[in-house]
Length: 314
Ligand SMILES: O=c1[nH]c(=O)c2[nH]c(=O)[nH]c2[nH]1
Image 1 (cartoon, rainbow, N blue to C red):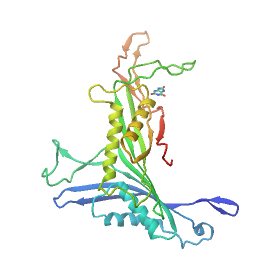
Image 2: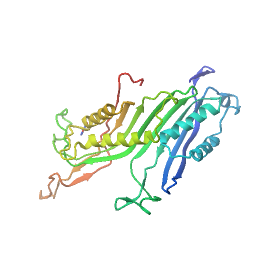
Image 3: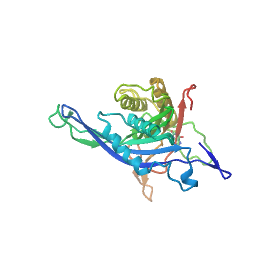
Image 4: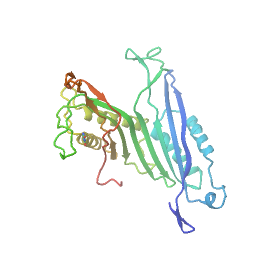
């Protein structure tokens, strides 16, 4: 909350950013589960004496904030979702310290996946898994918890790179003296999806109790996003633009998951340029026939949008 000091508005928060922690759980059967989290915490309070009076008596040291991440990871005896861990931390800071009015916890989970050999989990196949390999897309979450227990909660995905080699076109756009792009009904469509979705749970006292509920939700949302991008397995689905595909993806998420009230999608259009090469004397070296492309990182088209239900508070 903004405070007035000496004729100025003043807002403040403090915390620790990028606290890295890994946690392993070992089941009775000898299976290993592991997560690696990168945790950033901000604490909000009404106290400004550290800023204006050189009085640190209301400050939770950021070193203490960091240590709490490890202590709470240790206390979690059962595997839990990244969302649950974020809420657990935020609840701790708002209930343990009278100065703290709300806590914002953001966590990025590194995509360690169990290694499977020939389709089976490695190492004594049934009883034990100790091997992991790094995947690509990352599961994210950000929760804000107030001392009253009021909750705002989003989850998301970063770095979900998707590409299809057909069933994509772009035509009928504005044509003027600067336009060079031809209409096409056949092109490569490539993007790297960043998405966040807001859950409608508004209190820490009113959350699904099923273990790993939010991990399951994350996997289900990812599947809906991907299935909508690619369409049904045999026939696929035609994309008239990144905008249209993005809308279909967002609509599918809101249509499918009743406890998601808002979805934001950022989908850069990563260009694969047709290669046409000819020599100085006009001999054609390479003629593009939807086969040879020049992949590029930049520039890229930038397309993003948010969709929410009418009753959403956002
Ligand atoms: O799907 C697209 N949307 C655009 O807005 C755009 N602009 C462009 O040059 N190519 C594309 N493709």
